[in-house]
Image (tube, rainbow, N blue to C red):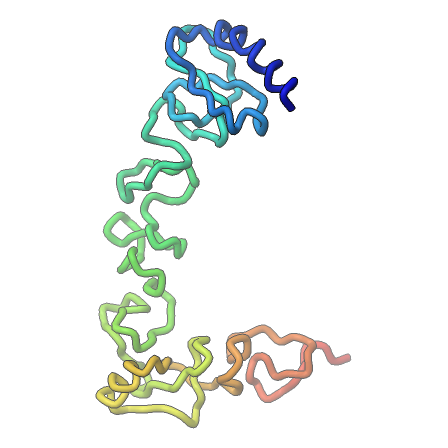
Length: 221
């Protein structure tokens, strides 16, 4: 290992000359053994550009780069940067939409999308409303139940037991403080199993996964 390090040091001036840098190079010696390729780092943020292009003129610095830089012309943009939402710039180079802060794949309604609360993953069009103080389905109402009932949802899968429900919202509010889950939809035949509910997929496992009253029906001859 020592011989390898000395070899790197001996050829380093050649690389620096090729890059044409007149400034102190950015070299992370701890990382030198992991990534042996010297890349030109125009913005001096320590991250290499995926273009692999060698320097053809004076560079502002060279580095033993550790991660890809999606914009090597701007030092504020690199995989270690803090994302600034809704400015149209991918500061952290993760490729994710700059208008989807809660990562639910639906962009903010304030920026052309449909997400009414882009800071809350549990809120977006198409979600089931649950009693949590959030407008989960983005219909402009909070904790409403289309059936007038809130079903006890012990396993938290969005479906409750038909035999356990409440209509009195004051009772529900009291129960919520005791970490009891509620859902607007009933029909859960196994409210102790998150993977069993009316929208689940049926598997060959001896269970009624989709709560249709039949077991393993999709696998019968």
